[in-house]
Image (cartoon, rainbow over all chains, first blue to last red; front, side, top):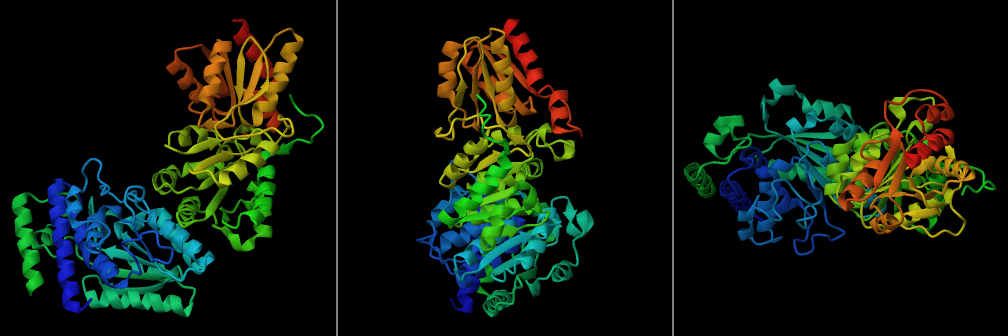
Length: 279
Length: 313
């Protein structure tokens, strides 16, 4: 996918996030929009996957550990053909496979049911171990929130993954600096993120999480690191903005962690997203 | 009744030996432990199949998640620790295993006060109650070595996650050689008329000894081994309701939510019978296994008194 198309697709993905959450009447727009560029590059450029055969053994695995950001993943999945885009508007409705947080049993293509924070990285480790045993040469990607890494289990996995030399695992922290009770640095400071993972034995890359080119380069570097067999897993610290792409959400910071826009606000947001697409 | 010709053996030992044997036949088995491989006996597998054994360090939460990742990618993971520690990470089991529908086999050794001197912190006493709440999760506790071996092999193909609770202490053989075991089935051990004793795990042998003593006093008591606390063998219990009005449960676990809880729920739903739940009713503590079983009223002489009082009441 050429750069201009990727940018347009990413904005379309953002628009879907707004439409889905507005239709549902609730959800997490801030953390979905901060993720949008990362998820977009993964699904449209990086992942080795087959939407028509989600259990293909050779596929790359992607686990969204910050499960509340799943509207961005659903949008990317629909846009790549896992299910029709019309289904996106069933988000959070009774009986929908598009649960408020990812549900592996209900939606093919979801690798792990998440939403209780801190657990996805461990599941990613298990996937990477299984693939190494089976000699499947694919990558495992896992995106966490920055607030999420306050969970102790993340650090158990952070110790364990380099110890088991799982260089085919690439984790990402969506460093959007906000969490429910306030700014991450005020609630429970986790900085410096990169230095911590480096000390734990990870190959750390720090990037602008809204620069599509930089994101793609980082994922390519993670793959190259795996190919080289360094034994080190890769951690991408992606500097992002909560609500990215919708000005009043960017400025409102945590006000948009877990609130749906009104239809009026959604209209404004969609106009802005559309304008940015044609830029 | 107890087979006195066979040396008593801990069910954790039977587990370790079985797993090491099955490793050959089932290449999809992988085993994880959180720095307790010597105690859970998973080391027997580790020595034979080092490439399929993963040391996770003292990190049970991560071990549960890694087990889930292995399971959803085609492996048959057995994750091992003390029951108290692994089921203490309930949210990880609830989400990464149960809700993810990852068929992880969770092995929890060191069941109940029967572990002895290490005391309360190391005793699994609430594990059955916790895991019994999760949809599809099998909650199992074999009574002796041959049942453990059969159960572990059956679990390889079992289509749901499962928790297996094992003893640290040696327990006597209570099943006849050649017994056919099945997850979800109660094993009848001894016939009797006045009441049905439903026992599980390390105290099945103690229950049998107590009943034997009471039969010498002219009483007649049926005994069955409930190794599958979930799924519970409701067909067996429904038939038993035709034979009995009095039921007794015996377990080395809190009296809340374990086998006693499961049978109480069944009988209350049926609207039948009277139930006496025997189990641990206070925090554990240090002591020899024998002294502790006596103190908490779970050894044969104490059970004998309790059975008699309830049946005669």
